[in-house]
Image (cartoon, rainbow, N blue to C red):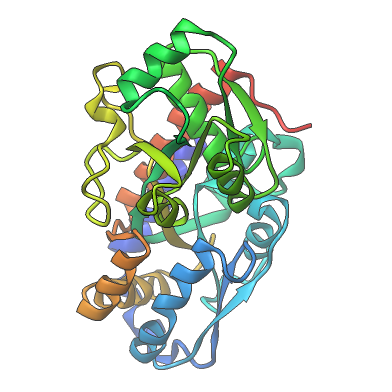
Amino acid sequence: MSATRAFRSVTAALVLGASLGAAQAQGYPAKPISLIVPFSAGGGVDATARLLTAKLGELLKQPVVIENVAGAAGTIGTQKVARSPADGYTLLFAVASPLNVAPLVAPSAVRYDTFKDFVPVATVGTSPFVLIGKTALPARTAGELIQLAKAQPGKLNFGTDGVGTSLHVTAEMFKQRAGIDIVHVPYKSGPQVLTDVAGGQVDLAVLPLTLAQPFIKDGKVKAFGVTSLARSPSAPAIPALAETPELKGLEMDSWLGVLAPAGTPAAVIAAWVSALDATLKDPEIARKLGEVAVKPQLIAGPAFADYLAKERKTIAGVVQTAGIKVE
């Protein structure tokens, strides 16, 4: 059996067996729960997690405490959860980078297996990236940008938050779908990239919509399109890149979700799915998520496992074609 099939089978068993383990859940949780965010405090992932914890704690009847364990593109905190006891008291609040990008671009540095060491609990939402450019670029739309790049191959450049990140992979996907040659300029952080695009030092960038949106509204950068199939409710004036004929079907949303160490009891997983579902249905929580460009979306159990497997396949194709590798 493949790792992906085994991953789905374990997840299905957990969800289907939740009712059988109800008695085990009577004592859970009996103490505060640590939710590991594998990135620094103050970033987009951390901010989203903190919007949820008060409500989750209220529903689970124990505090849910954020613990930031940053470093190595999220892999250090992710590894900590993989090695934690599977008792429901240490969970991971994650995005794709440490789970589906790092294992492909830096396999020798990753000390966990996404499909063997974790059980997917549920997503909490998705948030698109956005392709932006400096205001001096003589292109108004994604279609015009593609034609401009084709007319001068290798002349334009794009910035991301580093080699082998989700932003880098998404930009390479855009390049591949558009059939253009633009040069990657890696930075250490998204805000640095945004500042240099606004200042005209870099031509283009793929960044989280929530990060770039204030600069877009102020006219400091151009927005060519978001990476979701449909326009974002938080920025309906910005087209989806998929609306451009050359980019039809392009989709690379940033998901946010909760995973637990492999072997976590089914009843614990069920309790978390229930709490997350109720949290996302809270109107005030949904409003606050919308303010940071996150669309609430619960994908749980086997569906979340399938989502991760499909995403891994898509990213692997882009990484292989682009030859992305972190030394």
